Image 1 (spheres, rainbow, N blue to C red):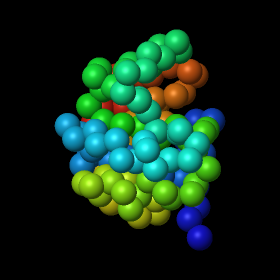
Image 2: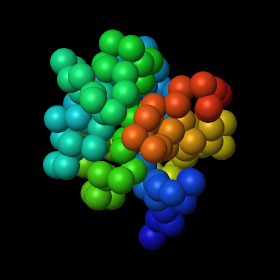
Image 3: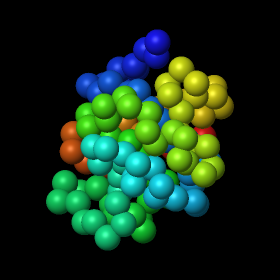
Image 4: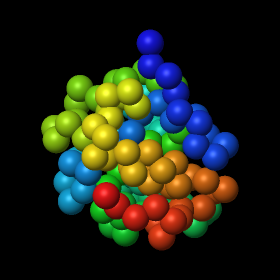
Length: 114
């Protein structure tokens, strides 16, 4: 059984890592039953998060994610990992994903890419 990771005030089950950068394929967005993968194409966020064109990858909102794993097999670049399966070299993406929703604000400068 996977153990979720608590980062600040969020529990993280799945992480989107480096292979997503530059690709941003939205098959995972379509597969997610609770719409927890952001940003969505054509969406403007009132809480200050940047839109699809302003980020280099997609993010999983740890508050909205129900830990179903539906996104993992549909990712064409294998960028989505259960926390326990995340390669060590991409552990910085745990914080990068969490920062997308911390305090309702995106914090790109807080967690630089690996």
